[in-house]
Amino acid sequence: MENTKITSKDYVVYSLAVIAGILIWVLSPTITGQQEPWDSESSYYFVSLFIAGAFCGALHPIKIWRWAVAIYFGQLLAAMIVAMGPLILLGVFFLAGYTLVALAGAASAAALVTMYKERHI
Image (cartoon, rainbow, N blue to C red; front, top):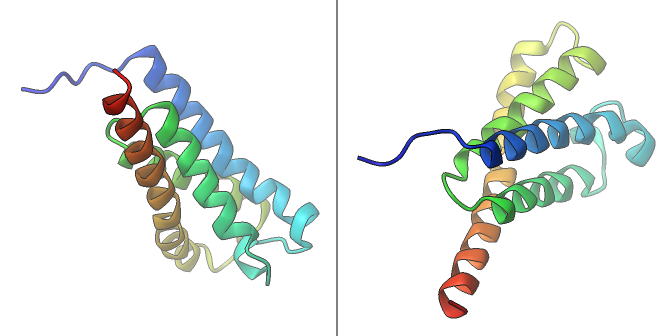
C-alpha cells in the first residue's frame, strides 16, 4: 500500500496552490480590466492557470491532481467573494473546466522534473 501520510511539504504546496488560485482572480481586474478572468480577451487566464499548476507540479511532482484541485478551490473562494452573483452554479462548472489547464501545467512540470531527476541521479 502506498504511503498516504501528508507531509509538511504537502501543506506548503497546498497553501501555495490555493493562494495562486485566489491571486488569479484578485489580480484579473488590474491585469485584464475584467472582473472575471475568463471574460478577458487576453490569454491571462490560461497562462496564469498553466503557470500556477506548473509551479506546484515542479515543487512536488507526486499526485499532481491535488494541486489542480487546490487551485480550483482557491479560485472558487475568490470568485465567490469577488465576482459571482446569481450565476455561481454555472461558474462552479466553468471553474472546473478551466482548471484542467492547471492540471496540464502540473503534469508537464512534474514530467520534466521527474525526467531530469532520473537522468541526473
